[in-house]
Image (cartoon, rainbow, N blue to C red; front, side, top):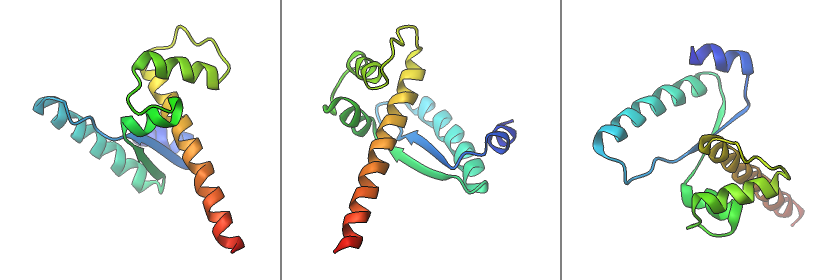
Length: 118
């Protein structure tokens, strides 16, 4: 189960993409239910949750919030110094989310350290 997986892996942080608003109503309901279960399990385990919009992820990875999937995939491969040509689009999306989060965490730390110095 999802609870067992989270218990075994013991993540400190989970990164999610905010829902895409152009979805049809049925898909949006199914996604909302799945997200609700995931968020409840993660919160129950005390996992920090960060969410980023598709435009934020694209901007962090490519510098362009309107980049297409091919551009994002190319930059993910370049940033991770790998070929990665056989990756499923879901894997590329997950890696792009992770890269976006890493960048934001680094920026947060820099901002926090500069505030402490003043």
